[in-house]
Image 1 (cartoon, rainbow, N blue to C red):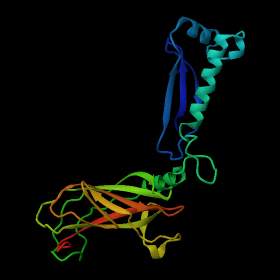
Image 2 (image 1 turned 45 degrees about the horizontal axis):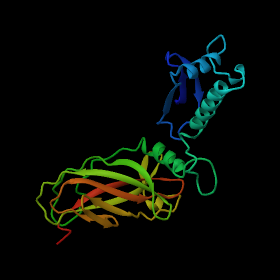
Image 3 (image 1 turned 90 degrees about the vertical axis):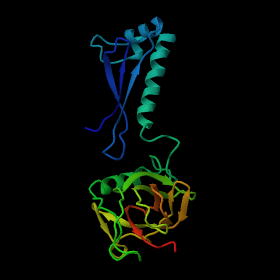
Image 4 (image 1 turned 135 degrees about the vertical axis):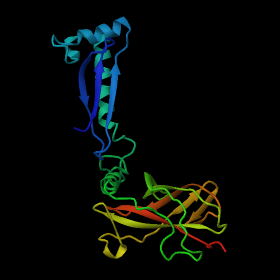
Length: 247
């Protein structure tokens, strides 16, 4: 069962009950919280008095009208609000008014499709570049997060670590995005959605390029790649090193 609840208790730290909330749309992620009421004598006594004989709930109607009843009522109301909105913050609704954060649907698709996609060992692509077939180490590609661009459209952010041997001052790194369908890559010709294989930007340290090619020279570091995500699809990216690209 996917966790999405808040455990509530008094300072004696025995769980009274669990308040269920909304789960994350991606089944790989869970959340949970703990609420412990104040150990102030008046507050704790209010919550203790709101417990039935089974000590498995807080029932404000068991209390007479007054501050004690207000303590319990307000706490339960805010806990329920927190449980309902933690995975779907109220300030992040999609433009069309449907419930949930603007990236939740896209994140679900990306998570489910990339979960089974393999990261093939990147390096100098066969036949790529003019400087021969030497391979330089690139880590497996990491999908790190989704962001919105200036126009409010989702972009997938990927990272790859480059450990450069420093042999080529004109070395370039090229990013080639692709659609991911059922955990595997597919070309734009096979796609059932519109996809133009674009890269928004590549950056490493103080280097940045618009598009899918970045001249890194002799530098090493973590390269960040942003790729626009089409509607109802997931994207991946492959990297290849091209020798002599800056000459």
